[in-house]
Length: 180
Image 1: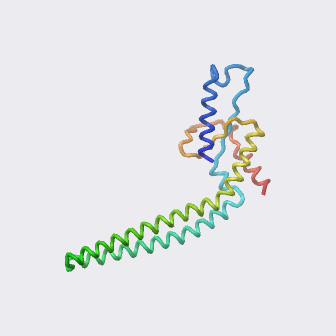
Image 2: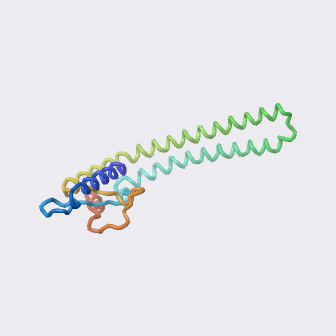
Image 3: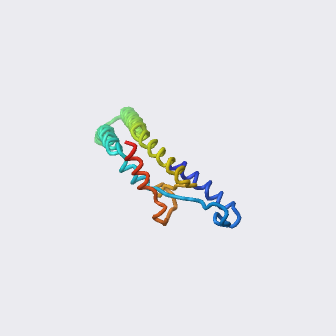
């Protein structure tokens, strides 16, 4: 959603710059209607988001617990190795180092797997909500004849200040609550 909004924002800015004298060069030309939203506020107040977030947090906590347990096992194995290293023969030392490397690789692989599963689960839970929000935003854009709608919460949005009259967040929230 954010990438699409950013892309359309740049396209709109280039189109406005291409008009001689800017977007308001001639009174006969229609003005460029712009709005913005707070996606963070919209998501937090969208019906179903709190339940999806709660479900996600519970599932991710299980992943975190597993990673923490694996980290403790790895740390314990390293401590045991550090205590025994002086008494080990070179061959035994080399074997223990190899075992620790395998344990480290296993830990990293499992950690990456769980992180991927968490990202996939987050997508599964949020995709329907985001699709509904996007549909409402697109509908409002068409109805209100907006050329651009920015997301003020998008990373790198570069919106420093804006006229509060351009904020259509409340309209999006109203529409989402009506469509329950």
